[in-house]
Length: 289
Image 1 (spheres, one colour):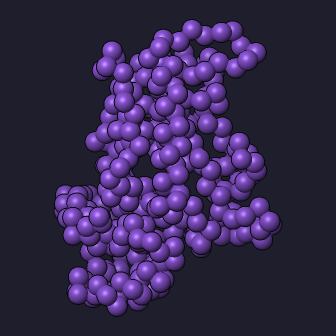
Image 2 (cartoon, rainbow, N blue to C red):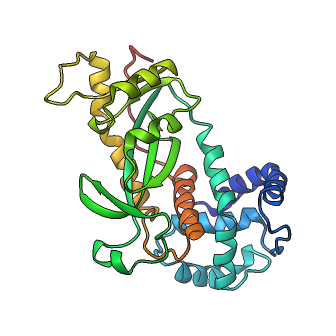
């Protein structure tokens, strides 16, 4: 059962330590030295963004109206809808920082990698789409053509997210692997889309063992029983993507700015990391543990 109090405490504990660093970063890296102060703290802004993703609403205006009507006693003062959207978009970097901090807690020696598409609109509306045109591109997946971005993700045997990266829709999966595994040492299980001898040798120098199936026109690669078993468990990462899209509204066509689009993605990822109870787990072979 969803516990809003526990969720807020987790978020607030993080921002008690991180908030001074965050404001210092904004002042040093952005031209706008004056940032209009808000009545809501950053932890409350982030909390509302994540709470929305955990709710059954797929429309933020309806969720926020219900929040003001039923839960206004939890906040000293809630701004109007337009101001709330502006605050969430302004502090999408805070959502990103929380997501990054949660990932760093879950390192493992056994990792699974894959990517999923994030279409920003239906294919029939590509010619009319304007809001995400600066980052969205045409791409092709096993499900066909799409217009949008890609989410590249690594998970461990506990179903926790270990590393993520966003790219344009046309970016090949193998180009994002080195960025995802930076600083890690593990066995990495992937599908045939990650087959590359050059990449395998590069990762080996970084103590990453990339394991994939072979293609029909390739020389047969003998895999151990443990590696074959772990490769067959790759469907669990597809389950994770289904949860992100179905339960936490990862894919949306309602974003009207790039910052709002990123804020929605990171809010969905944080909602899964903080709130999801029954994550897709993989039983690692005892011989390897």
